[in-house]
Length: 115
Length: 113
Image (cartoon, rainbow over the protein chains, first blue to last red):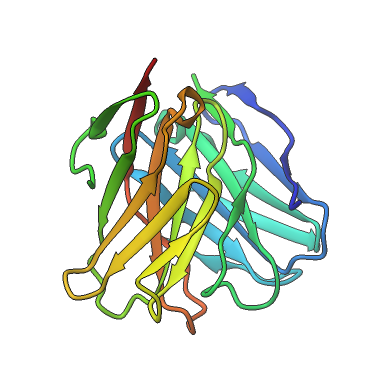
């Protein structure tokens, strides 16, 4: 079974803080994704990565950055957290090189609250 | 169906009955489709997928039907159980492309015991 681990289930931070969300996979998968999920808006793609040190912007990258120094770990960074970044954050991976023809497998999410 | 507002459409089904959850997609070039189940407090879980060269695919207690003519996808759950209560949403993509999946907003399935 594919295992995607997000380091925190719940996180509370203050406005202006720099926030790190971590995602780790236990297999040698190339493609990793960060989404946020909000009521009524569904899943929105923030950033994705198809290899170490490679990254691509998704639909809503503003206010976020990512880091992928090792294949198994993909970090989402909120440079200066704001209240509108309160959300559920989901990490996903796909197995193999091409992601257009296979499902993404998700972690259980990090519910982030910015006060 | 797809949600256009803050509240997800809800389907209430009696335990033991069959459930049908619908999804309309917009991109006529989409040729790969996935259904996910998301329980409260958990991440989305892959259920079943289908490629556009098929119009039906069956899994364990689930069947996905694809109608490309009207761009419609449905998920049928046989003998619905309380553990099936969750939000279900579809995703679409082009099979050969390396573009991210496009997700629907979901339908909440509520199973009445």
